[in-house]
Length: 261
Ligand SMILES: [Zn+2]
Image 1 (cartoon, rainbow, N blue to C red):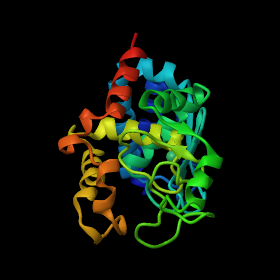
Image 2 (cartoon, protein in one colour):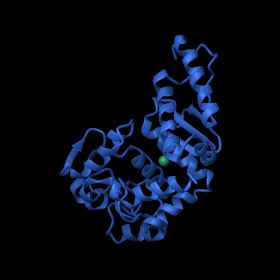
Image 3 (spheres, helix red, strand yellow):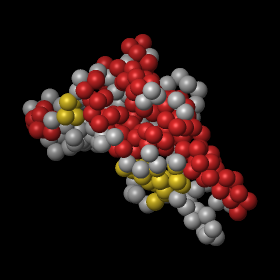
């Protein structure tokens, strides 16, 4: 971070601590890179504010997440990791708004013993059964190999149960892959809800995730690669392309209102 941006950074960090009980970890005094850019800190602030507003205010955010430490660290190829009270964002690149909200949603779920994602699974009519997932692939009725996803269109493991967790999602999530499970479903549903047609940092990505399934089979997307998109439309594309008509949107909407009481 540029030295001239340091007062701004300290001010932002203080506001996050005072208003949301979010502790941003960085060595601000060191001459070297703190790991945070001015843009990234602004994005963090803006999206915590977005989440808190949807929850009904910063007091609700504090109750729901109950103190969170956010740091940047080398965590391999993925963008973030979260436990209760702790979010780690990749030090390799600036965190996107989507990653920030997704990881904070995990921290919220974790703080509640991961019961929020269990509630989502139940609400939408899904279940988790690893052996059944394996069986589905063994019977060749899935879209992945017996031992996992394959790097070829139509074999990435997007169908219900065709993921490492054996998560048989029901109704329409905004997407699925080999790493999908109810926790990821919850975090993605929160990000989709907050972004869906709200004109914020998340909105373009939310729209993109849905419109992906309007592409023909074999089409290459610059961010999502190549897949048989049309074949997956019935699993992920909501009625009339309107995500707010999905059970997941309703679940998050009700959850936010319930936690507001
Ligand atoms: Zn996640």
